[in-house]
Structures are given as C-alpha cells and as structure tokens.
Amino acid sequence: MLRSRTSNTSGSSFDLVIVGVIIMLLCLGIVMVYSASSIIAANKFDDPFFYPKRQLIWAILGVIAMMWFARYDYHKLRQHAAKLAIASFAMLVLVLIIGVNRGGSKAWLGFGSLGIQPSEFAKLGLIVFLAHMLCDAGDRMQSFWRGFVPPLGTAVAAVGLIMLEPDLGQSVVIMGTTLLMMFAAGTRIRHLGGFFGLGLVAFGGLVAAAPYRMQRIVAFIDPWKYPKGEGYQIIQSLYALGSGGILGLGLGNSRQKFLYLPEPQTDFIFSIIGEELGFLGGLALLMLFGVLVWRGVRTAIYAPDEFGSLLGVGITGMIAVQVLINIGVVTGSMPATGITLPFISYGGSSLTLMLSGVGILLNISKQAVFPHR
Image (cartoon, rainbow, N blue to C red):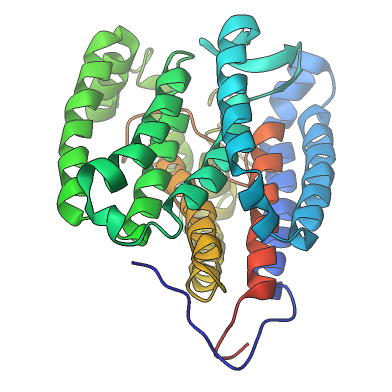
C-alpha cells in the first residue's frame, strides 16, 4: 500500500520542475498543432492559424485553471467527491441524450465547432471520488466484496456509459487509472490479475460485437492488407515516423500533413513530430513526459496524507496511461483507439482537464513532506 512519508522538512513551494515541463509541453504543442494543421486549416477554413489560435485560447484557460487548483487546498476536494461523481455520471448520461455526433461517436456537448467532451471531465471527477473511496480503506482492500468490487464497480459503470457513445480510448484510460489507484491502495494482486483476465475476455467481446473494432484489430496486425481502409492511417503514420530519421525533415517540412495523414493535429500529432523533429525530437518529448511522471510519483509518495497520495497516483497515472496508449497507436504497437497526446494534441476539453489535474498535483506538492527539495 502506498503510504506517505514524514520528515522535518515540509514543502513550502510548488514543484517548479512540473511547472517547467508543462510550459515546455504547451509551447511545443501549440507550435506542432500549427505545423500539423496549417495545410488542412488553409484548405478547410482558409485560415492556416485556425487550430493553433483555438489551442492557444484553451491553453490560456487551462493554465488559469491550473493556477487556481494549485492554490486550492486539495483536501477540500474530498468534501465534494460525491458531488463530483454524481456530476460526472450526469454528464455522461446527458451526452447520450443530447450529445453531438463527431467521427462516429456521440461524445460531445455543444454546437458546431464549440463543445466539451464530458468523458474528459468525468476522468478527473472519478479520480477524486476513487481517491476518497479508497482512502483509509486499510485492511478492507484485502477483501474482494468490500474492498475490490465497490471502486471497480464505480469505474465499470462509468466505462459502460462511455462505451455507449462509443469511446474505447477513454474507457481504457479510466480503467487503467482505476487499477493503478487500487494497486496503490493495497488491492490484492490476485484480484487485479483475475480482473485483467476477465477484462481481456470482455475486450474480445466488445471487439467481436462491433465490426469496425474488428477491422481495426485486423488492420493493426497487418495494416498493409488494408492500405485504403482501416490500415490507411497507421501506414501514413509509419511513413511519417520513418521518413523523419534521426534528426527529422525540419520544423514545418512534414510531407504527411499535405492531406495524407487524416487529422494530424489530434491523435496522430506525434507522427508529425517524429517526421519533422526526428527520432531525437520524439525522444526528447518522451523524456519530458518521463520527468513529469517521475515528479508526479514523487509527489504522491511524499504527500502528507493517503488521500493526497491516491489523488497524485490517479492524476499521474491518467497522464501516463494516455501517453502510452497514444504513442502505442501511432507507432503501430497498439490498435487504434482514438486518444489524444496530453498537452500536445489539439483539443480544448482534454487540455483543460489535464492542466486542471496538474494544478491539483501542484497543490499536493506544495503540501508534501519531502526529505529534501
């Protein structure tokens, strides 16, 4: 079980390493959103700056939210945990009733190009609620019915609603984050292992129930068998990564963004980064994420209480799982799931949610008890 450590030296300032990494990620994200989307935006909207302008606005709003949460005592979130869970479920139900269908998924609330994705905000709400539920559970986490089933059932209920949209990517992120939090809280390994096996069976059932998912699996195994269908996007992604080489073609010199790689500013933006900045550029980005995850885990370990520890694990785990899935998809290591790259991909809901989560992490770091700064 993850436990907080104590020391005579208390934290008195935010983790500036996290702040620095976030600033670098946001700056890189805005630049790469422009580079990846300029051709598409010029053809579609007659404005090559269409996407980066909006990304900049969302980034500013997200940074404001991050700063607010960084100064908001995270302990107060526990008082609102149940309300946040209810609001999360309400939004997930509402989007199924009046949501806007985009890309085959009824996952948006709003009109036209303006809208929010409730599943993004539900992720953070569920993390707060699960941290509250798991906090102080103690030996109860060793029990299957009293410790394992309640938090898992909450996550499964949310995933069930999200799968009705449908959105497999967000579902995987939520389940992955939940399992990490439960592991940190002291859940038995055999319970987690049993659920993982059951999850694989359920995943197979979900794939078999939807022909388009089965096509994605087949295309994942051999994308060149379907070069004009389900395999098209991953083939173009691999072309982009391969042509980038070690140093890349240079910023702005991507070839795949010339209407070859669909929506390169969102899920597959890492492909454009690899093409323009090369292997070294992609590696540098992954190192930034690595530093962010390290500092997040460090904050969780030295949080002043178990609620802060679990909250830190949830937020850090959410970011890490989403990065792993996105990179796995664009490199052909995982089937396509439609998930953005945190802080980099175009998308207001995702960016605002992630920055709000980082703000909470910063507040935990300010109150953490480190052995040294």
